Image (tube, rainbow over all chains, first blue to last red; front, side, top):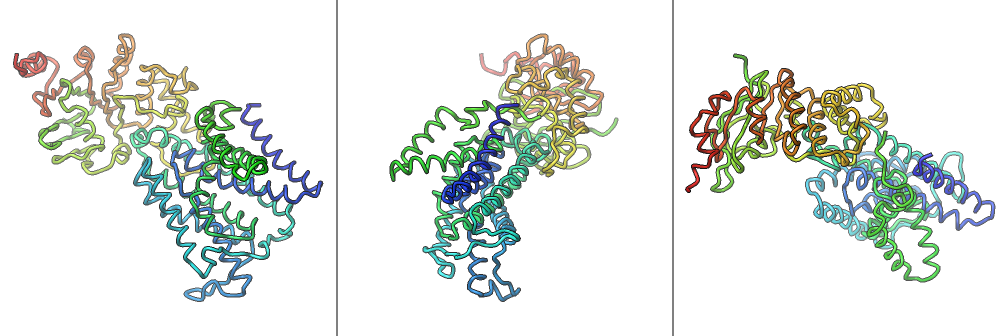
Length: 327
Length: 251
């Protein structure tokens, strides 16, 4: 078995075994911690589609994470207060059904990514980083100054939204949902990375001039990648809001964008499972180092510096070596 | 005579006071190799860029395959059948050789927005890709990472990718550059046969190659075509001789 496949399998096995052990040992906090890791992993996988496969360094993925979160928050807020979501032009009520919320979160974040991407992708390099950051900041301040949905204080949702046949308030059952979604997203991205689209997108990352010479338009490839990327991160945002039963503007903050990028870089840019490793590592560090000092970020910073300077492929690059070309 | 595949009329381009293309008229007929030569800085690259669509001309027109492509972007011209190789190899360096050629086949076939079936298991794409690799003699290297290829092999790969597009004309920007004697000879033999598939507009510094291969030669000096004609006509042309012997510079 190739080292990369072995590492993938080990990661998925760990994410299955550890929460089950925590469940047997009656440690709900550890289950919640792992749920956080899995949700962050999904957010990172989303960013990796743009950053790793398309070479699009977005520092604004908090926009999609936040939109996903607020999609959940707003829908559940109206449902718990028995107020209609809107009365005109359509009479719509809120909902507490997770699948519906996911769908709304995915569609909204995809549309937002399409709009942000269409404008931002006219630039590249540092300008692209700055413009994506600017869009996320716009949404951040918008969320802060919108009192109807809690403004700066955010929105508390008292009961976690429901999934047919499951008790989502039970940590292990909610974890099962997140883990299943992680598998689904991984499968989709793994297939897409090897598809016609993935092959052409990778070429557009390496050499846009080449892609034009064979009759394709890099901009369109980037835009589709950015939209997919935003949609996946938006789904993670909805799950994250449900995990905390709380949404706040901090989901839109640039620190959130930075953290999502850290998952990708720690794990390995452009590796399908990279963000999973990165998110697990991040949660582990947060838990261990956070116990040592409230200023644990300084150690995280040092580790990140080490990865960027000496192990550019992240954890995957370190263990599995340079990526072999897909067959 | 049949209609030209590529027809350039009155193309001009200025950068401020510098005229890099001055009223250039040039055409490429089916079955021929038309070589474009000229000293360094004559404006060959600028002309190529206007033909491929990377640079808009100030005036004049480019017709390709009966279409006016003067204002079309590069990708659209490629889809119309303009097969191009670059002066400096332009390849996806992290991909294998086979992936790079498959890319060409995929670009030609279209259907890029498919997300599920693995591209490298697509029989039609692979068939076209392997066929192109065989034609340039790179099939033994199909699983080599492109960044590990030698300079000459990268040039061959460029040609192979252009072949997958089944173009109606080739635009080759110094394909022999840096190839070495043996490599040049092999590529020359190959280009010699290729002209019957699609005509070639060949920008080349290697005069031996140009004189052996070309049916017609155009000479570009200071952004102007000073002569177009057969090999013998060009050899005997006094303006060309003076341009190449450097008599226009004051001595």
